[in-house]
Length: 331
Image (cartoon, rainbow, N blue to C red; front, top):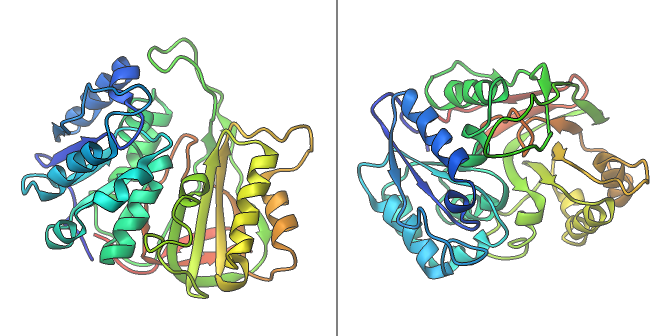
């Protein structure tokens, strides 16, 4: 599936698949809307905007209905999740996959929406996009807001010759301060991707937040993986013990033997529990002796800035030279 580029005047709709972010972070939510409107887009609110049912926006069925309504709306050009959470997977049995197949549109988000993005791709073979979420990403402050927008704009508003190679940002941050108001500047950490395992591989990119992905592995909603798959995984605020647990799940499902390569995104506010082990260290410990290329600290994740990544599209991973390039068109 190749989408038409987004343009000024297009409609971006937003939905709340889990955490009621429009309620718990109203100032950041309004700031995000204002930002996208300043770029020339019309915004359309999902029907659960401003709604809260304790830890979620509403029941699973009603959350799915919100998404299905936006999928079927012919005036909507792009759908973006407001924020993540912990139970977006509850929507999956109720999504109207036939409607998405008949009226495909750009759908984007990150974190807990991983399960929805992968399920849509698994059921329809239509590319979905792992990248910014409305409140988390476009409610951020400059300069990281502007960097994330530049990546979003480059990927979804412009056409490119191939291969398209991602350019590593100069800096990144995972500082967590007041979400509603700017109280101080965030630390711009010097950026550096890591060669965990040397080598090159080509294949379709699949993945997202591993904790969310774990809710669908082994089900019909997880796209199958093989040697022509480059697995992309990232996470947020996990301990070393929990990361080990998630990597062990991948090993139990024979992922490390069956895939062509791994891109490991930055882990936001990771707790090494005084082990001195980074996520890539634990990955190699659990995976054992594998010879596939592995690149670490990629910038499509919960940290700022955030790339936009078309799931299901063919890429070239060169872990030796630390490059990631798209090989087929998405726009």
